[in-house]
Image 1 (cartoon, rainbow, N blue to C red):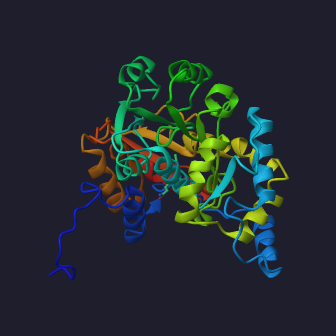
Image 2: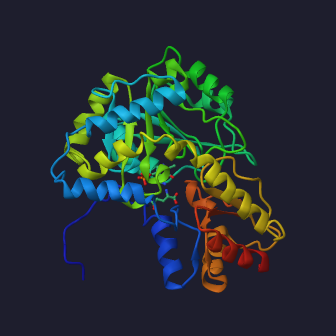
Length: 385
Ligand code: PMP
Ligand code: GLN
């Protein structure tokens, strides 16, 4: 008998618990190696934890300013301008958030109204569509082309109409590991030119682009930067997914709307961590070295799994590798992922969960943000399947 006897009309009737929660729990229950949810199994820099603890001891423990500690916003502005060429005013155009998930939710809540359409590309990271629906908007899904997960700009053109309010892009792309090219950015610029369409650019893996490719941030293109919320996450960049710290950069008029929601959703974020991050980012190697660090992990993992029966295109960014198991089994990817966890003691994420119609491409996503020994143990299992 439920405690509440009244009627609850769910705002998200078809939504369950996120796959990351489900698979990490299943991995723990089955004592399986967890390459499902994306997080490192190694610690962040001790310099960073020492900085946080010193700021805590020094008494930086009360509310930060609503948009974030100014020293950190200044460092973020330097990072973006040096890497991508757009100058953001730290006072009015940068806000520190409690993770990219909150930044994405807030950006959507601040601009999407009843009946607005939002274009998202599938497979899509899972937090986009719920935020759109709660805001009263309608997600419009466009499939990325297989096998390289590229954007079909003709399809995008056909879907744009007077109700299109926002286009969400994500590069490097979770879950596929694909990256957007300079010509994709040029297409997006062309399509949105002289329209009121805004862009949300999820760039949380911005520092993990491999093989000498460049990260194509919207901040490399003046026209796009002028209509975009650019979002990145310290969880990825400094190996601290549990701290839930991220940021948004956007032109002043967009940021003013963002902050109206932000100030009542979280008000402000963790103070000592912001001071610590401001110091830590002054050493640029702390983010510039990340691509080499993760490329070495990708290469190591790929070498170890290459004798297996899985097939794959190597990841071009993020810390995820997709692998196809169609020569091993014709089970649904969700069933195969559960069996892999229970029988083989290895957890991964089935790709179909990132499609609203649960398209099954017989692909699993493995996270390689792990110690060498973890990757070696996981690869040993993969090669036995
Ligand atoms: N966007 C993408 C593409 C992600 O993979 C993630 C999580 N890893 C997020 C947003 C959310 O980041 P955060 O943990 O900072 O909320
Ligand atoms: N972004 C992480 C992933 O893709 C998961 C974050 C979460 O659990 N919400 O695995």
